[in-house]
Length: 205
Image (cartoon, rainbow, N blue to C red; front, side, top):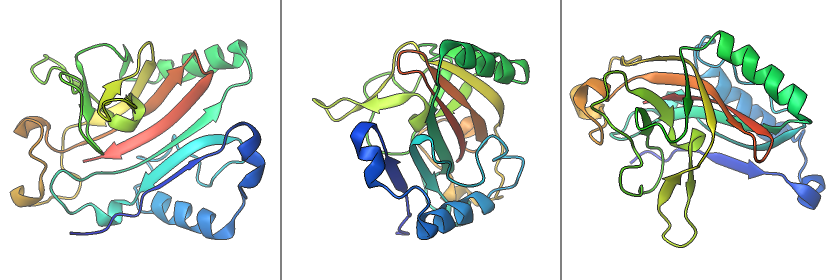
């Protein structure tokens, strides 16, 4: 089994000052992952770690070779005020393929880690299922340790397609979702008004 390098860094409140945001090693690993993707896939994502990030994670496309696997990047930043929040939401909405609320069952969740609460992955039989990565819509329940959808998120899907970018054999394709949805990519932005944050993300599965 391949070991995937997945980094999750959280910098909030007083802990922000404890992390060196410009660590050369961390930047190099992030940039290496960024460069594993076609530029069109990661054009929403910063090409290096910005100083104002809240959290981030990445898994290189170079290592996407196992069943139920994925590659992707996500980075969350804090928004200073409601005016900036609305401006960014309008900007991304104008060039989007879909704008959805996180409770919409036609938004299907591409699993990346752990187990889901019942029905969290959505309705695969929708006429137009819209793929969003787990990290763009879910959070873990501290009591059950199962992943559930966050409420009242605004999700802007800029682009998506159900196709195998890597031309893998059937034995390498994930089995947790229907065959016609089992490969693809999606990129977009998740807006959280309660926390005044936005998360830019991309996923390939």
